[in-house]
Length: 268
Image 1 (cartoon, one colour):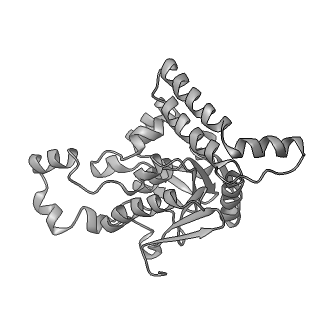
Image 2 (cartoon, rainbow, N blue to C red):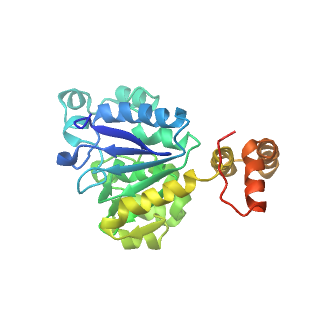
Image 3 (cartoon, rainbow, N blue to C red):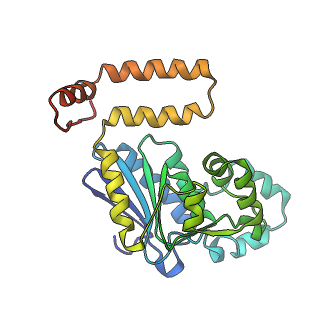
């Protein structure tokens, strides 16, 4: 549906998710937070999909949450200052940030950041496995400006740019340009604006050409490796490599290497 707030399509082996509120700079509504996890799960279940690209319609990636709906509604205003409501929210009785499922599925995702990614917009980009930025992109963890803490950013930003830089970006709410984002490792690559989707789709298709079982287990292993001690990590690795060695994809990859041809992986 062209008028939907989030568009979803599959191009070959790549799912493209587009935030589609360009007139509001793709600011998230509560419905978008509810719908995006379902769309991500759909991509995760779809056997055709081997990689995901997330982008925004128009001139902005995502300007955060829709302030008019999320913060200034009559319902929110009437509850403002209620400690009971705050504690209920901390216990999970609130709209969960929409991009969190990107941190759970084992299919690589690429944020194609076509403009400003601020507030929840930058957290959505951080939830993706990788980020490619237009040279017009900007990034800002601006939550403290409105008296809030970041969503996925508090967990992901220190892991991506390091602890000291994460402290700085979150506590100052500074907005940085694409060049600075590339310099500190927040994005994988900065490209000319008109080449953004081409670059993102090229990377997605390159990933999609690899063995799906190995990619899925690598995704899981990277995440586990952030939290597991060496002994438990090696236990996971032994299980993962055994599974790979017994897959048809491994045999195909070995044959293709010996025959000097591109492999044709089927995810089996």
